Length: 334
Ligand SMILES: Nc1ncnc2c1ncn2[C@@H]1O[C@H](COP(=O)(O)OP(=O)(O)OP(=O)(O)O)[C@@H](O)[C@H]1O
Image (cartoon, rainbow, N blue to C red):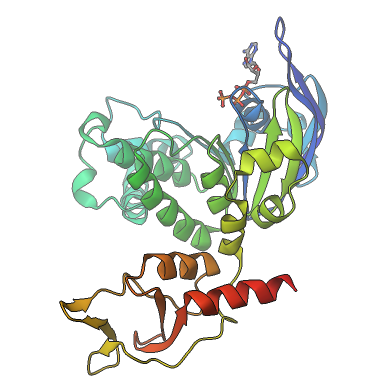
């Protein structure tokens, strides 16, 4: 666990960047620091690995004050990923990832084998290994940055706007890959972003900071959406809070109607809705594991206003209409 205990940072000649910040970031989870520009996110992040020293207060890792630790040893256990990846431009992708393990005592051969494995894990097959950073897209560079931070196998990773330099489509793809990776690795991650959507999607915990380095709220994404602490947080989380809240509710309890009127293949998988001009697409399907937000989206985008549920084998096993969904949402309120 990383504990912030009444941490203050005042820059010489500047104002208060972080103001009496106290929070506990759980081990093996991802905590996202989010807030408007200048609210102290990066300062808070960099105090964890002592790139910046607090003016007052303490930061503890598993109960031990970071200032009591040897700086080099401390940083060896903390990976650091920054915007634009910060790669060494004159080293190949492979050497970018293998550099730290070599510095910390791995043989060159072992470090390179590990680097190849990590590159594969972040979605970069072997043919990228010999390229130089300038020969990669922004999204590919970010992946190398993540692989490089993972190479030393640090229990903690600090990530400062790691996905902000890539376009929105690639960013969504990187998010999904990152969530899968984190599910396997279970690192303690602290990530900075100013994008609330990114924070709510990736964070197990989210710390919302406001101007002057004040903590406005610390909680799960669901806490922030369903129970914002004040107008600042609700304004920051956005006007579509109701819709966002549906992402946290499972479709498992949603009553469905029998499948009727839908054209199916021999295995019972949906082909489309018959109409005079041929089959109209279902525009996607959902399973019991999906959220009510997904179902709402399907109902809205379906050409017939009906979402199709499928089982694990892909066969259609239920239908949900506008009315069914509205009734279910209304019943949750009572
Ligand atoms: N070295 C410095 N000297 C003086 N003031 C600084 C220094 N670094 C940051 N600040 C100030 O401290 C405050 C917090 O900065 P910080 O970079 O932590 O914010 P941030 O939330 O990460 O911002 P952004 O989203 O724009 O990156 C800002 O007002 C900034 O101007």
